Amino acid sequence: MHMWRRVLPNLITSVRIPAAFSIVPLLCMDLQQWDAMLTQEVGMILAFVVMVIAWLTDWADGAVARSKYGEVTEFGKWFDPVCDSIFHLLAFLAFFLNGWMPLLFLVIVAIRETESYAYRILMWLYGLELGARRSGKQKTVIYVVVQLSVVLAYIAFPYAGMSYRTIWWITLPIFASTVGVATWSGMDYACHGHREVQKARREWWVL
Picture 1 (cartoon, helix red, strand yellow):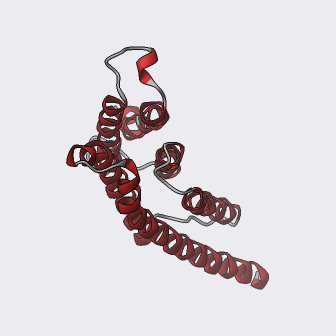
Picture 2 (tube, rainbow, N blue to C red):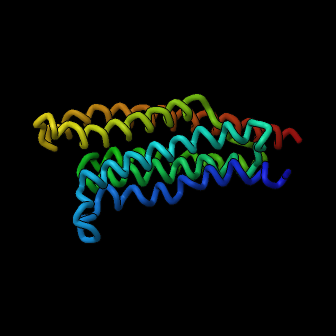
Picture 3 (tube, one colour):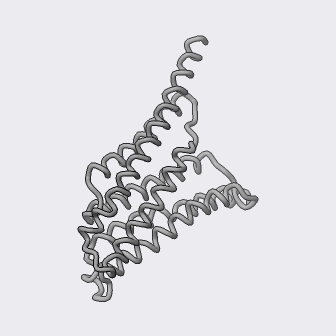
Protein backbone atom coordinates (compact mmCIF):
# COMPACT_ATOMS: atom_id res chain seq x y z
CA MET A 1 0.00 0.00 0.00
CA HIS A 2 2.85 2.37 0.85
CA MET A 3 4.50 1.78 -2.53
CA TRP A 4 1.19 2.38 -4.31
CA ARG A 5 0.83 5.72 -2.53
CA ARG A 6 4.23 6.76 -3.88
CA VAL A 7 3.56 5.52 -7.41
CA LEU A 8 -0.05 6.62 -8.03
CA PRO A 9 0.54 10.40 -8.36
CA ASN A 10 3.43 9.80 -10.78
CA LEU A 11 1.32 7.41 -12.84
CA ILE A 12 -1.28 10.16 -13.20
CA THR A 13 1.46 12.62 -14.16
CA SER A 14 2.85 10.25 -16.80
CA VAL A 15 -0.42 10.44 -18.75
CA ARG A 16 0.74 13.85 -20.01
CA ILE A 17 3.66 12.33 -21.93
CA PRO A 18 1.64 10.32 -24.51
CA ALA A 19 -0.90 13.14 -24.52
CA ALA A 20 1.84 15.61 -25.42
CA PHE A 21 3.16 13.49 -28.29
CA SER A 22 -0.36 13.06 -29.69
CA ILE A 23 -0.97 16.81 -30.01
CA VAL A 24 1.40 17.36 -32.96
CA PRO A 25 -0.11 14.70 -35.26
CA LEU A 26 -3.68 15.61 -34.29
CA LEU A 27 -3.16 19.28 -35.16
CA CYS A 28 -0.65 19.07 -37.99
CA MET A 29 -0.90 15.80 -39.91
CA ASP A 30 -3.30 14.90 -42.70
CA LEU A 31 -5.40 12.41 -40.78
CA GLN A 32 -7.49 11.56 -43.84
CA GLN A 33 -4.69 9.33 -45.10
CA TRP A 34 -5.83 6.88 -42.41
CA ASP A 35 -9.55 7.55 -42.40
CA ALA A 36 -11.66 9.78 -44.64
CA MET A 37 -13.72 10.81 -41.62
CA LEU A 38 -10.68 12.27 -39.84
CA THR A 39 -10.75 15.83 -41.15
CA GLN A 40 -8.60 18.65 -39.77
CA GLU A 41 -11.57 19.83 -37.72
CA VAL A 42 -11.92 16.39 -36.13
CA GLY A 43 -8.19 16.43 -35.36
CA MET A 44 -8.52 19.81 -33.64
CA ILE A 45 -11.48 18.59 -31.60
CA LEU A 46 -9.56 15.49 -30.53
CA ALA A 47 -6.55 17.67 -29.66
CA PHE A 48 -8.80 19.91 -27.54
CA VAL A 49 -10.11 16.87 -25.65
CA VAL A 50 -6.57 15.56 -25.11
CA MET A 51 -5.54 18.97 -23.74
CA VAL A 52 -8.43 19.01 -21.29
CA ILE A 53 -7.57 15.49 -20.08
CA ALA A 54 -3.88 16.41 -19.76
CA TRP A 55 -4.56 19.46 -17.65
CA LEU A 56 -7.03 17.55 -15.49
CA THR A 57 -4.17 15.15 -14.68
CA ASP A 58 -2.02 18.17 -13.80
CA TRP A 59 -4.55 19.04 -11.13
CA ALA A 60 -5.25 15.45 -10.10
CA ASP A 61 -1.66 14.32 -9.52
CA GLY A 62 -1.02 17.08 -7.00
CA ALA A 63 -4.36 16.54 -5.29
CA VAL A 64 -3.73 12.80 -4.97
CA ALA A 65 -0.14 13.28 -3.80
CA ARG A 66 -1.32 15.54 -0.98
CA SER A 67 -4.20 13.26 0.01
CA LYS A 68 -4.18 10.14 2.17
CA TYR A 69 -4.12 8.04 -1.01
CA GLY A 70 -0.79 9.43 -2.20
CA GLU A 71 2.54 10.83 -1.12
CA VAL A 72 4.72 13.73 -2.24
CA THR A 73 8.06 12.30 -3.42
CA GLU A 74 11.36 13.85 -4.52
CA PHE A 75 10.95 12.13 -7.89
CA GLY A 76 7.47 13.59 -8.28
CA LYS A 77 8.76 17.11 -7.57
CA TRP A 78 10.99 16.77 -10.66
CA PHE A 79 8.77 14.58 -12.82
CA ASP A 80 5.66 16.78 -12.67
CA PRO A 81 7.26 20.00 -14.02
CA VAL A 82 9.19 18.00 -16.64
CA CYS A 83 5.93 16.52 -17.97
CA ASP A 84 4.37 19.98 -17.88
CA SER A 85 7.20 21.45 -19.94
CA ILE A 86 7.11 18.62 -22.49
CA PHE A 87 3.39 19.16 -22.96
CA HIS A 88 3.74 22.95 -23.19
CA LEU A 89 6.54 22.83 -25.73
CA LEU A 90 4.95 20.21 -27.97
CA ALA A 91 1.60 22.02 -27.92
CA PHE A 92 3.24 25.31 -28.89
CA LEU A 93 5.38 23.47 -31.47
CA ALA A 94 2.17 22.16 -33.03
CA PHE A 95 0.80 25.71 -33.09
CA PHE A 96 3.95 26.90 -34.88
CA LEU A 97 3.91 24.04 -37.41
CA ASN A 98 0.27 24.86 -38.12
CA GLY A 99 1.18 28.49 -38.78
CA TRP A 100 -0.73 29.71 -35.73
CA MET A 101 2.23 30.94 -33.65
CA PRO A 102 5.30 32.96 -34.72
CA LEU A 103 8.67 31.21 -34.46
CA LEU A 104 10.08 33.95 -32.21
CA PHE A 105 7.37 33.31 -29.61
CA LEU A 106 8.07 29.56 -29.69
CA VAL A 107 11.80 30.17 -29.18
CA ILE A 108 11.17 32.45 -26.18
CA VAL A 109 8.87 29.90 -24.54
CA ALA A 110 11.43 27.14 -25.18
CA ILE A 111 14.21 29.21 -23.60
CA ARG A 112 12.06 29.93 -20.55
CA GLU A 113 11.21 26.25 -20.04
CA THR A 114 14.82 25.05 -20.39
CA GLU A 115 16.23 27.92 -18.32
CA SER A 116 14.30 26.91 -15.22
CA TYR A 117 15.76 23.39 -15.39
CA ALA A 118 19.28 24.77 -15.79
CA TYR A 119 18.80 26.59 -12.48
CA ARG A 120 17.24 23.49 -10.88
CA ILE A 121 20.32 21.46 -11.80
CA LEU A 122 22.70 24.21 -10.67
CA MET A 123 20.95 24.52 -7.31
CA TRP A 124 20.90 20.74 -6.93
CA LEU A 125 24.71 20.75 -7.28
CA TYR A 126 24.78 23.12 -4.29
CA GLY A 127 22.41 20.92 -2.32
CA LEU A 128 19.53 23.36 -2.81
CA GLU A 129 16.04 22.94 -4.19
CA LEU A 130 14.26 25.29 -6.60
CA GLY A 131 10.65 24.68 -5.65
CA ALA A 132 7.54 25.81 -7.46
CA ARG A 133 7.04 29.56 -7.35
CA ARG A 134 3.86 31.58 -7.70
CA SER A 135 5.02 33.02 -11.02
CA GLY A 136 5.48 29.49 -12.38
CA LYS A 137 1.98 28.45 -11.34
CA GLN A 138 0.52 31.60 -12.86
CA LYS A 139 2.43 30.92 -16.07
CA THR A 140 1.02 27.39 -16.20
CA VAL A 141 -2.54 28.67 -15.82
CA ILE A 142 -1.94 31.16 -18.65
CA TYR A 143 -0.53 28.40 -20.85
CA VAL A 144 -3.57 26.21 -20.27
CA VAL A 145 -6.08 28.98 -20.95
CA VAL A 146 -4.25 30.15 -24.08
CA GLN A 147 -3.76 26.69 -25.56
CA LEU A 148 -7.39 25.71 -25.06
CA SER A 149 -8.65 29.10 -26.27
CA VAL A 150 -6.56 29.08 -29.45
CA VAL A 151 -7.60 25.57 -30.47
CA LEU A 152 -11.22 26.42 -29.72
CA ALA A 153 -10.92 29.61 -31.80
CA TYR A 154 -9.66 27.70 -34.85
CA ILE A 155 -12.50 25.21 -34.43
CA ALA A 156 -15.34 27.68 -33.91
CA PHE A 157 -14.46 30.96 -35.65
CA PRO A 158 -14.59 29.60 -39.22
CA TYR A 159 -18.31 28.96 -38.64
CA ALA A 160 -18.64 32.72 -38.15
CA GLY A 161 -17.11 33.27 -41.58
CA MET A 162 -13.64 34.18 -40.32
CA SER A 163 -10.59 33.14 -42.32
CA TYR A 164 -7.56 31.54 -40.68
CA ARG A 165 -5.64 34.74 -41.38
CA THR A 166 -8.18 36.76 -39.39
CA ILE A 167 -7.99 34.28 -36.52
CA TRP A 168 -4.18 34.53 -36.64
CA TRP A 169 -4.35 38.29 -36.09
CA ILE A 170 -6.92 37.86 -33.29
CA THR A 171 -4.79 35.31 -31.44
CA LEU A 172 -1.46 37.12 -31.98
CA PRO A 173 -1.92 39.48 -28.96
CA ILE A 174 -2.87 36.43 -26.86
CA PHE A 175 0.39 34.72 -27.78
CA ALA A 176 2.28 37.97 -27.14
CA SER A 177 0.85 38.23 -23.63
CA THR A 178 1.73 34.56 -23.04
CA VAL A 179 5.32 35.23 -24.02
CA GLY A 180 5.35 38.23 -21.68
CA VAL A 181 4.18 36.10 -18.75
CA ALA A 182 6.70 33.38 -19.63
CA THR A 183 9.53 35.93 -19.73
CA TRP A 184 8.50 37.45 -16.41
CA SER A 185 8.27 33.99 -14.82
CA GLY A 186 11.65 33.02 -16.20
CA MET A 187 13.25 36.15 -14.81
CA ASP A 188 11.66 35.46 -11.43
CA TYR A 189 13.08 31.92 -11.34
CA ALA A 190 16.49 33.14 -12.55
CA CYS A 191 16.72 35.89 -9.93
CA HIS A 192 15.60 33.56 -7.14
CA GLY A 193 17.99 30.83 -8.25
CA HIS A 194 20.89 33.28 -8.54
CA ARG A 195 20.26 34.64 -5.04
CA GLU A 196 20.14 31.15 -3.52
CA VAL A 197 23.31 30.03 -5.30
CA GLN A 198 25.19 33.17 -4.24
CA LYS A 199 24.01 32.65 -0.67
CA ALA A 200 25.21 29.04 -0.74
CA ARG A 201 28.59 30.11 -2.14
CA ARG A 202 29.06 32.63 0.68
CA GLU A 203 28.19 29.99 3.28
CA TRP A 204 30.66 27.56 1.74
CA TRP A 205 33.33 30.29 1.75
CA VAL A 206 32.74 30.97 5.45
CA LEU A 207 33.00 27.28 6.24
